[in-house]
Length: 122
Image 1 (cartoon, rainbow, N blue to C red):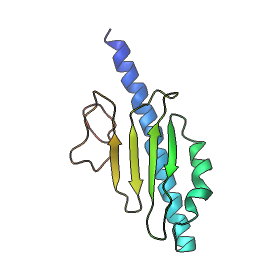
Image 2 (image 1 turned 45 degrees about the vertical axis):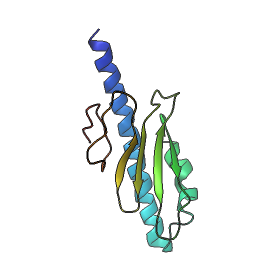
Image 3 (image 1 turned 90 degrees about the vertical axis):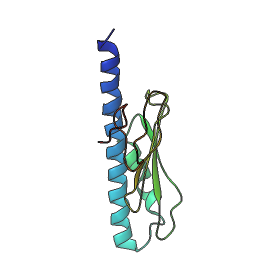
Image 4 (image 1 turned 120 degrees about the vertical axis):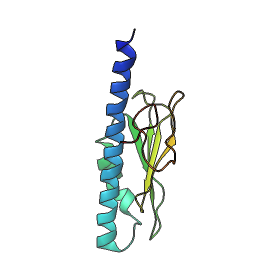
């Protein structure tokens, strides 16, 4: 009875790491794109498919960027068992846990990606 919930939390944490790694990789590529083009416009279209291919349990999305800003979102999928999780990062490297499932505590302040149920960030 104790081992099964602990195992499930371990699996969730590994999937969260997959999402946060994807967000970090996407952000790095967007910054490289900006250095080459002096705008973020077009960067999302160029990198979305490659980043999504690396992330299985989350859907990666990039809001329509303008010349100086963007926001990248990782939203947990039902198929991946991660419904309720939403993480974001923007051009300023501001990280947020926008949504967490029931039983999870949001970090305070919400300036990081929660990787554990108690709101601890990793």
